Image 1 (spheres, rainbow, N blue to C red):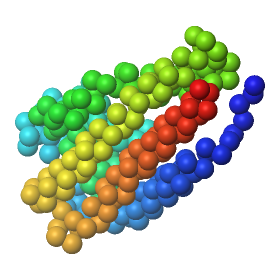
Image 2 (spheres, rainbow, N blue to C red):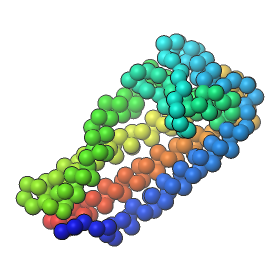
Image 3 (cartoon, rainbow, N blue to C red):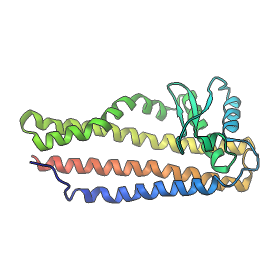
Image 4 (tube, rainbow, N blue to C red):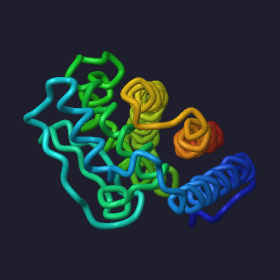
Length: 230
């Protein structure tokens, strides 16, 4: 039997549309406020460096990484990496994103529990995201007897990927709250600049919510397909 797309895709489509909308919104917010310079006149790299230093994290470097919206904190190497437009930029978007990644560095230093848990399950979650669907559909298409168990293994592995994404939500929301607090209490944002910075970070957070929605509906789809083989 050859597997073809079926009606269970209807379950996933709304989440996929939501994900596309969220991606469009974050790019729109980023492009809009990357054109608005912050009054403080500092680059994202300078703000990240100052925030790290004020927290005593002098040993965490701030580096530039290629691409757009590729900003992240690497917990293994303990490095804040900023895209060129954030690293060199002086816009409200650049400062908000730089402070957000600094927030992740602070989470790591403080042993923030959701971040620590996410880092621990990452290897299994990554394995699940790579192998879950191939294993499931091998079992679904060719499975009989022992091979049918591949469907259950695929579902189990994909569940770890969903847990990873669910734990990512509080990690990202907390980093955004930290970012705004850091920027305001240290005087890097004027009162009227807080709203735009929040808008950029809120739009970015929606992409993580959308990722969870897509993953959960995909899991539901796998469970329905699994039930059809019983």
